Length: 256
Image (tube, rainbow, N blue to C red; front, top):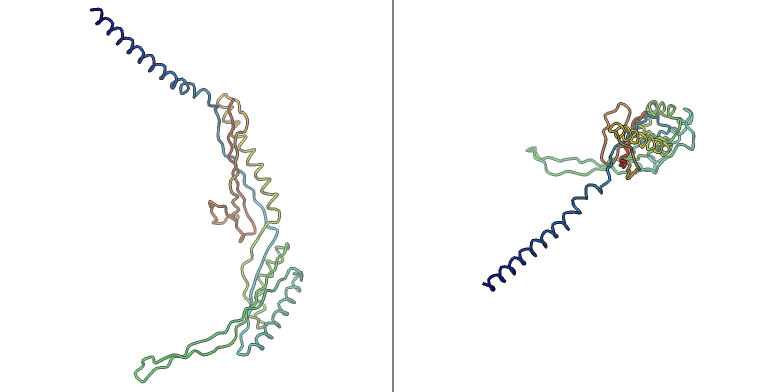
């Protein structure tokens, strides 16, 4: 009987030991999780935005002109003469000489194929025949006098009446103070985000704390009233004189 009682005591001791060990393990692992929610600081994330309309102050216009002749020397002399005429025309319209840039001349040999047929109408062969030298030269004009150059670009085809084969391309429009505009817009977007955060937190009876994180989105520069759309890497419209810029600033604030 004594031995049996000893075994019961030993068994009871083992059970109690396992129970106590398990309980301590649960408490040890459970307490940090229980208090975890209280240690996390509340915060709020907002997105501020700003948009500004502006007018381009720099225009870049380009055109090309060409000549064709069976003799290369003759074609070259003709295109040089056209270059002088075009330059004089631009200067007469008010374009400054240092705003005009002429690029190198592209020279191409042109050919056509003449086919020969037999009496049955079947093609026998074809002959490659030289059709002359085609010379093309490009010019570019960059000016801050946007309205003036717009008019010149529209009227330059009048030179066709002087037997100058000129092709005018649509101009590109830029803004020389874009860097300053971006800084101004970032500041405005950040203030907009701060106001949103303050309004939301105050409305809920809280107090806005420190700024924890912020990031600036890509700039979207679209033509005013155009069909341009936002893109992941940012949009830069160059075909419209009047533009609208957009930017977002994401912010995360602590809530006290």
